[in-house]
Length: 420
Image (cartoon, rainbow, N blue to C red; front, side, top):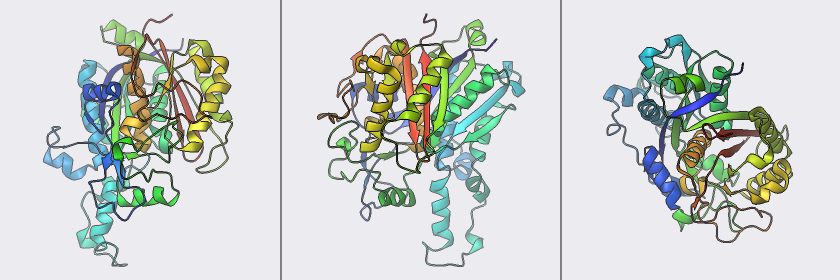
């Protein structure tokens, strides 16, 4: 018999929120965590705004040794993992270590440290022949993305499957999907899973500038990200992480754990079309949604809320709006949809896991986060996008979707514990 999967612990770090509670308060307030980039001088770049996390690794309890060897993205993931473990109340010593695994998503891994090391080795790019004496002793950690989930495994002594998933902007949800599959098939009983990225660096900003994916609305950072609005002009780059503790549902209930939500269905598809463009009909995302609902044994009319990808680019917002209509039919017009990227930005490989955390908290608290900065809806985006103000509602089923460069399209279904 296929095993069910429960979310029993959540840890989050994003712009405007240090921890799960602050993150949720930011979302339901409709405030944004976006500002002018402060990590470096952004003036040479087209897009000069980002959603930076107010993250101090020392204040978060990381030791000098940990901060010295870990890239910022790994630091974020480890801190979130510790919060999720504490929140779960699970004593990992009671679980056979080979039955505990880690599945972590990241799109650009240790880009922050790699860029820093390159600048040091090459004297800011002036030397072709670099001075190897300047090389950090932790360079291997930065070159090997697999170090990230390994660090998390060491936190709890996990000796089961330890995996890094890197599927661009769907990495965070796909890593959770992989963790769910390991539990349902019986390979693991407990998984620490989520995503982390710290991509606010000159090279990433320049790369996104080159394809004009990010917003040039530099004079008004707080209102720069405008998903589904007629005036939207690109997404806001962000950093952040979210980690979840997943358990076999019956095991979690047996130990009296608090269950935020059950992950009932997951599916992923590719569009085999273009590295950055999307087909207007959203067919491949619609297929992922249908497959996720089928796995959950639910019909379209059971969806109470959609946590959208909602990046704030014209092609994405239209693409997923079409996918919702295709997969849910007329029920799409009755279903609230919102984008938390309007408040916490787009943290690439981390955002999918952050959105799953938000979806679980939506079920837990009975409040739908709004889409901030949505004042003038695009006529082609004609669904209920919950503009500006949070909305109280009983939510039994959440559909969360992700879309990534490379044509990755993913969908996940969360259910209220015990929902019929």
